[in-house]
Length: 84
Image (cartoon, rainbow, N blue to C red; front, top):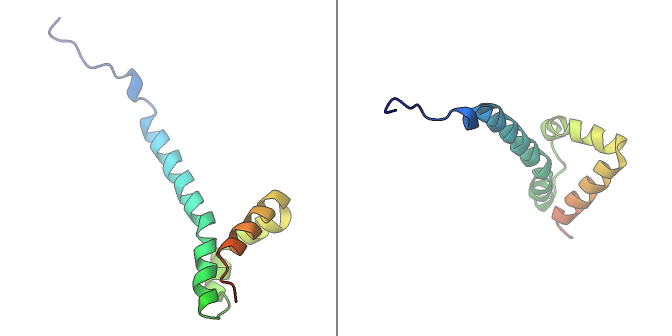
């Protein structure tokens, strides 16, 4: 009775959960980073550089082809865009 081992049932899959949570968080940060990037370059009166356009190309293509995604990204970017 003194040789009881801790119950391991609740620990299975914990590593997979962390991986999916981390991937989801990175994806969220990637999508939401568009707003601050637009504000940063907009305040300087500059166009987004080619490197930024390349980095965000998957979102651009997705927003062009999936209407709800496009509406959300338009709203999000306009929210951050500096008013002139």
